[in-house]
Amino acid sequence: MISGEKYPTLGVEEEYFLIDPDSRDVAPAGSRVLRRAAPVLGDQVSGELTEYQIEAKTPPCGGMDELLSHLARMRTAVVQAAAAEGLRVAASGTPVLGAHGPAPIRDDPGYRPGLDAYRALNDTYALCALHTHVQVPDLEHAVLICNHLRPWLPLLVAMSANSPFWEGRDTGYASWRTVAGGQWPVAGPPPYFTSADRYKQLCADLTDAGAAVGDHTLLWDVRPSAHLPTVEIRAMDVPTSIEETAVLAVLVRAMVVQALERVQRGDPGPQVCDALLRAAYWRSARDGCSGHAVDTRSSKLVPVAHLLRDLVDYARPTLEESGELVSVSAALRRLAGHGGARRQRAAFSHRASLQDVVDRLIRHTTCAAPVPAAFDLT
Image 1 (tube, rainbow, N blue to C red):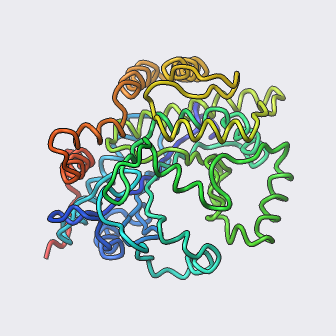
Image 2: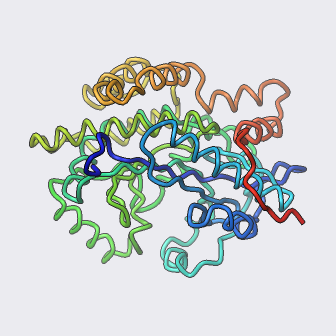
């Protein structure tokens, strides 16, 4: 934590799709929109692997209100930059329409080793996630905090599930992004690590094997950040609304704070069977917040609502002290009954129209914050 501050800072990275407003297909315009947005957002905006996407990042924030303010500003800036190119922006884990065939890769030298290593895997990596960073003291603490968060990762997948459609069809999954992203050689839930040295050794071994070609290709769903003094939680689909992003982020911070306290008491974290964790991921990706999920502590199927209650209890001490318990609890109750995937399917059901789904995503991605100054709309 920062000296003199009660809680660690947090920040988020959100990835978005660029949309052609006529066809509602994803549009390969990331580099053009980035040039428009960069004068307003600076290093808070960047390109992604594919030209269908763009990413925006908040600075470190102290709490929910500050985070919401930055999310509103950065989304507005990206929306206005896209509009200057005749495009729209949608926050969804997968593209609803378009993205047929190999995705257009952004021309960036940093991606070339990955193109050589992963080959056709890159063709379908049009996936948008929410990444939450929470400040931690050092790498040793970060690695052990990850152990404590591992059992909760499937529930984060279920809570944030916002990607039922892929290439114009319903996949039958609530988070197809989770399924598609799991194909990478270093992805999904990380192993259990006994120390920072063990973490560093495995990273080196994976690099030697060619499975990782840089820190950015260590795609585990929770990991120590390679460039910041944070733990980075990457399990979640990008939410369509900034309110859901903020709630999930402060919940994750509370989980990290509780995990850090356990680590400082000498608890290295529970060891969850890798096969069970993988099964829990699959079930959460398939069903989202509907019905049942795997409780990785008991190995039993239980109602998702029960797991959400347990997670709030786990994070409760921090959420109560930060004054965020009421907001988080109310938002989780809404997600349990009507998560992002279910809302996408509801939009489709009215007229069996995928264009309606995209229109809803565009409408709810755009926020009513003041427009940043001085975009060249010509």
